[in-house]
Length: 114
Length: 117
Image (cartoon, rainbow over all chains, first blue to last red):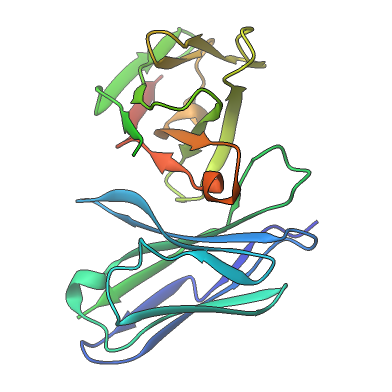
């Protein structure tokens, strides 16, 4: 079975540009999570969805960040406009009710904002 | 709010020996899960082991085992017969249970483990 798929794996952009990160959860999983990893703040939850509905977005840094889940097999995290402090690794994870609370992570997207 | 603390930023161990990584957490919850995730240089987050708080028996997965001390809010990871492939960052994580909000993971700061040949 394919795991969580994220694209792109690496993204380099200039300050002020729009960035869109993509995630395809594991088939059958109904919860999806976006995390950000930085040296300063470690791993922190940005937002999570249950059955395509955003449940908790209190971790989203500011209005420049938005996330959508239009269907059970696709989610996006958008940053507009991007800033150098957004440089980080962004992880998507998914889980199913049968997975015993285990979240399965994608390979991450390394974002660099110049 | 929950907090997870890993007091050892870096550790090293000789191949084939045993090492223990420490983790403490702070919560007022009585029901929760604890996890150890491994992040090798590839940066993929890989589940190592999981412990349910209501289970007194310590979880084990092959060479990996935990020492779960609920009263002390401690959750250490023991790696036996260390292998070079165990070199990675290890993250301790907490998840409260009971409602939808409990599906979030709160991570510690990580411990970088190096296994030396």
